[in-house]
Image (tube, rainbow, N blue to C red; front, side):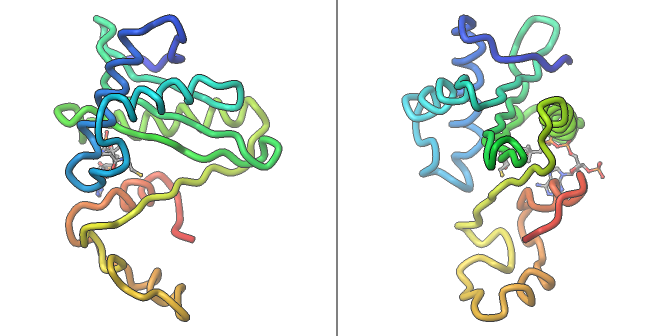
Length: 162
Ligand SMILES: CC(C)(COP(=O)(O)OP(=O)(O)OC[C@H]1O[C@@H](n2cnc3c(N)ncnc32)[C@H](O)[C@@H]1OP(=O)(O)O)[C@@H](O)C(=O)NCCC(=O)NCCS
């Protein structure tokens, strides 16, 4: 497995990355990228000048995972958007490798902070469907992962919930 830039001319890699989005988010976040049109639009946007777009590929060039970064706050801050690993390749370190690679690319560009937003719309954690106010931090401190929400993946990589 190696991690490379998404080449704007590589229509097949772009199509495979987009297909991963539809497949990877349909169970818990079905409205985000409901079809290939929405996912292809996202993939095209990820090729913009203020973006980083990297794919993990196998020896045959098949896309196993995709990570995007969006430049914010004059490049001091970058948002991860999106991140997805092919379902049959999860749990093998590809997600970690993609985030580590993005950290290196952001560092090269002078970035200081990386953040990611992640929703919970179907009761994967104790924060779903709950009024978090006014004691937001208390809720965060007591979060429990009920059904494999990816927030724990990010915590393992050093992210903290804010
Ligand atoms: C979240 C996702 C990117 C993780 O990719 P992955 O390749 O399976 O992750 P890795 O194998 O690199 O896992 C790194 C560590 O995080 C842990 N981890 C991965 N997903 C996890 C989850 N959902 N909950 C808890 N821990 C998780 C792994 O067990 C591993 O722990 P270890 O280092 O102690 O062995 C992948 O599951 C995915 O594409 N999910 C669907 C889309 C998604 O949720 N994207 C993120 C939305 S914000």
